[in-house]
Length: 390
Image 1: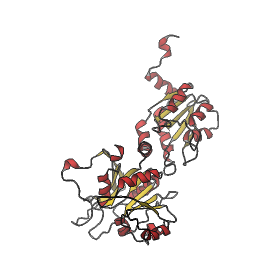
Image 2 (image 1 turned 135 degrees about the vertical axis):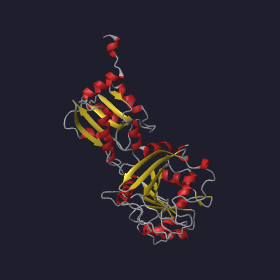
Image 3 (image 1 turned 45 degrees about the vertical axis):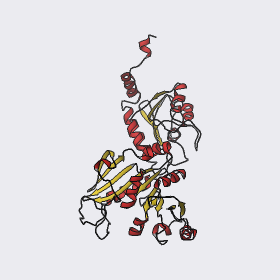
Image 4 (image 1 turned 60 degrees about the vertical axis):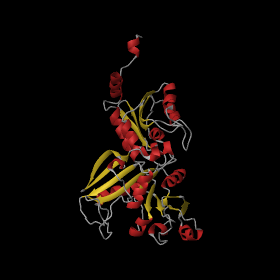
């Protein structure tokens, strides 16, 4: 064989892949795998969302996704769904196949046993137990591996997993709803409802997506929220109540239902007698240090990460929101903006605290996106230079 015949250019590989997949192309099959992965949302934490599609002779012969923590990984789920031999087929998977024993055996073993000829991968797995080893094992056994197909989309889908596996800390999303003049309530404190039904449904979808929800004592006293997920088939997040002085009423909804929904009370108060009614209601107590007159939020995140909580949706008031931003624990900001104006000098805003002195000291955001939800807008950005990432 001439040397030229033994080497394929990138263009030739792409053309060959399109022939092998019936002309649909790698990206479209990967998009389908991403769609499948999303179906595990809220059920796989702290594992990643992963989807897989198996294609043979230009036909999808099986699909699968990681549906629940501890159950089959996407590759094994797809292989189990095959109604014909997968020998010689191509598998599209959003994350690098695992090669170690955890709750499930290695997916690389299943791929090799099935005789899969080609693996098309979205993003690499940052888990040190995998991190390129899965790719190497497959290639050493003669499997063709194509990397980086829709990599950014795959990474964005698993931003929580990527952050948690690298830092051991929860990925924190600061969320608030406000009017176009930046108010989260009227001068009387009334806040129901600022946004419409579509935006509120999205909030509950995120309560299902993220492992925990966090609020401060001010929010609990003012609104007495349940902090639960109210979408069909949804999962209630772990509730984290920040109350440095144990001032929340033991009769608050989030306390009296602690026997039904896991509730963690984070406090600086070590008085066991004062803790007693909360423990009796079913709350777990996390005793933390104090920093600048408030809970030490960095310590709180370390403790939550050690408990296996990989993500937190922060639905606090202005004071807790500022403390979280100032302490550097926030990774992402979600601002729901309603086409309304409340006005009023004393009407509360989403971020309070001392604020910054000059514009150059602002908390900087990046990668802004805008989503329309009915009449409302959802603005989302990543926090630049988050302390947890440093």
